[in-house]
Image 1 (cartoon, rainbow, N blue to C red):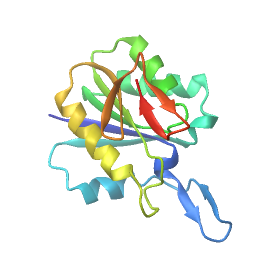
Image 2: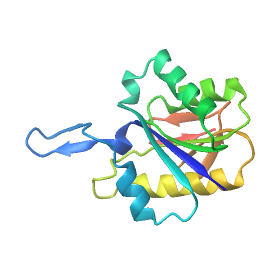
Image 3: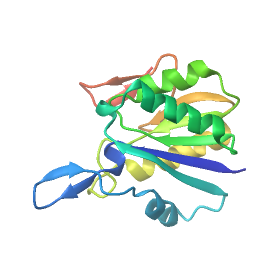
Image 4: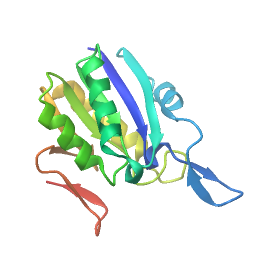
Length: 160
């Protein structure tokens, strides 16, 4: 069973700048994370873009959809910013691809103490290995179908 992990940025991949005190993008943590996870299944890593999901536009979502269509792997995990993850899930779900697509992200950047990035990615990989074709969001140890997922901003969790 082979996987493709596509990074689009989001909080998951942000870097902390100690000089300015800001979070931004330098490069993806994806290759470091994959090495740290000691994956045994074949995995193709793809950094598609590094943007905050609040800056994501329709043409970005179409790029993600095109990457999923072009994937040789049927099991795809997309690392995405949490603010607009549900919108991207709806675009991918409506396309009805014969793929298992799991979107995940993080509320705290990977390189910051207390991050949920590794847990969410590991959970998403497990979900992708077990789920049938379709699109779901894997966050906080729960799977949510693309048709009904939403981010509860007051509680900082996803629900369906």
